[in-house]
Image (cartoon, rainbow, N blue to C red; front, top):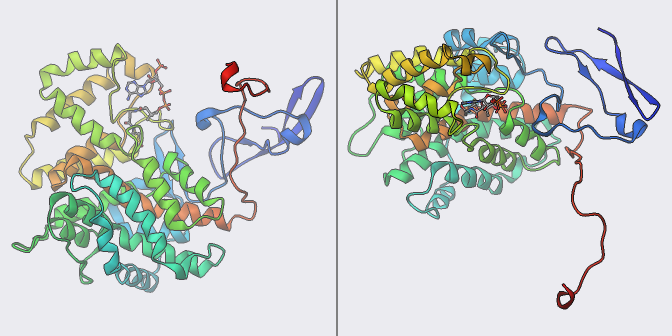
Length: 426
Ligand code: ACO
C-alpha cells in the first residue's frame, strides 16, 4: 500500500500520510486536512476513525482475535490471573515473580476505603441501582485523595491506578450490600483479589462465606475477560474526559456512566432478562421472529468490531458450564434456552448475513447469576474489571507526547444566523 493518500476537493489536492500499526488496517492521517483543505471529515459513531494510537489491546474482529499486549485472551484466561493481567495492561510486560509480589502487595494494601467514605453510601435510596451508586461513589473518590491529583507526575498516576484497582471491589461490594440492607464487610489481606471480593459480597455477620476454588477461579477469569477492550464507548469516554487533565477518579466515574448503557456493559443484565422472558425453548422461534421483524434486539449478540465469534464468549460459555455444574444447576432452563437460541441464531440467514455472533455478554448473565449475583450487579462487575483497562488507557494517553484535548468537530445543520425577536413580536 502507498505511503500517502491523495484527497481532492474543488481542484485542490492534499497529500495525507498513511500510518501503519503492528497489525490491523492502515490509517490515513487527516490531522492537517482542515488546515490545508478547509474541510472536516464526518464519522458519527467512529465507524472509520482511529481516535488514538495505542499499544495495549489489539482486536481483529473478522478473525475473532483479542490480544492484550500481544497475548491472546484465551491464554491469559487459561494460564494467568486477573492481577497479573492488570500488571500486564498497566506496564506492558508480564511481571517477574518479585515484580508481581510487590504489585500484589500494593493492591492488597490499598483495598480499604476511608471510614468517612462509608457515609457516602447512606445518601442513596436503599433501592438505588448499584451502577448509580458506583457512578457517584467512584467520582467521590476524587474528594478523598488529594495527594495524587497531579496527572503529570508518573508516581501520582501509578498510585491512583493502584488505588482504583484495589478499591473498586470494596466499593462494588458495598453497593451490593447496601442494596441488600446488609452490613458492609471489610477486606482481608490474606485473601486473593477474587476471593476477597466474593467474601465482601456474600459474607454476613451470622455466617462467613465459604471459599470455593471453582467459583473463585470463575470470578477471576470473568474479571480477566472484561479487563480491557481497546477504544470502546466507555474507554473513549475516559480518554476524552481525561484529555482535559481532569481528576483520574472522576474520569473513571465518567467511564462507569458510559458502561451502564444497555448497548454496552448493561447488555448482560438485558440479556439475562431476555432469556428469562423467553423462558422455555419452545418460545424461541416466536422470539427470533420478533428480532427479524425489528421489534427488539437479540441481546448478547452482535458487536461493532467482532464480525465473528467474540473469543471472550467462547471462554465465558465454558466458564458458564463449569459454574453451573459446580452449583448443581446444569439443567437450568435458562441455560437450555441460551444454548438453543445461540444454535438457532447461528444458523438463521438474518444473523449470518449480518455477521451477528454471541458476544461476551451472552453467557455472562447466566454465569454471574449462578455465582449468586442479582442482574443489577452484572454491570458493576464489568466496571470493576474494566477499571484497569480504563486506567491503563488513561495513563497511556497522558504519556503520549502527541496528546491533545479531545475536541470533535460537527456539521452544523441548525438555523442560520438571525436576529433576536422580543417575546411580544413572536
Ligand atoms: N439483534 C438483532 N439485530 C442486530 C443486533 C442484535 N443484537 N445487532 C445488530 N443487529 C443488526 C442491525 O439491526 C443492523 O441491521 P441492518 O443492517 O439490517 O439495519 C445490523 O445488524 C448491523 O448492526 P449495527 O447496529 O449497525 O451494528 P453496530 O456496530 O452499530 O452495533 C451493537 C453493535 C451496539 C453491539 C449491536 O450489535 C447491539 O445492539 N447488540 C445488542 C446489545 C449487546 O449485546 N451489546 C453488548 C456489546 S459487547 C459489550 O459491550 C461488552
